[in-house]
Length: 82
Image (cartoon, rainbow, N blue to C red; front, side, top):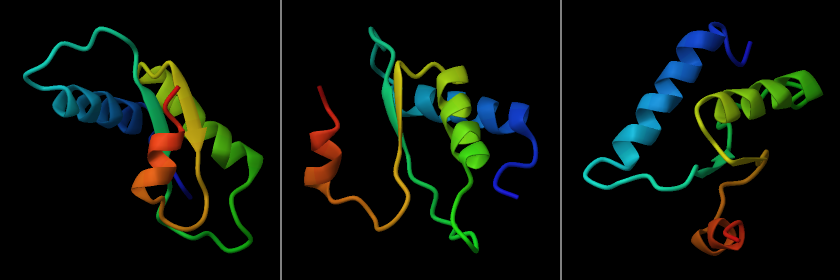
């Protein structure tokens, strides 16, 4: 199971966002790339992908991208910026 306790996972993500912006002011809602490191047999279902998206949106994300596969390079992360 990818996420066992949705509310706990959402709270942890909120705290992570606050920590990432500690010392600064968060003027806009962040864009979040959800990149699960666990490899599930058969891949991720649409439900599991939606759980990741809903977690990020519930934590305050303006947009959420789901990346499944190889690690992202710095250039690939930069390409997500608008």
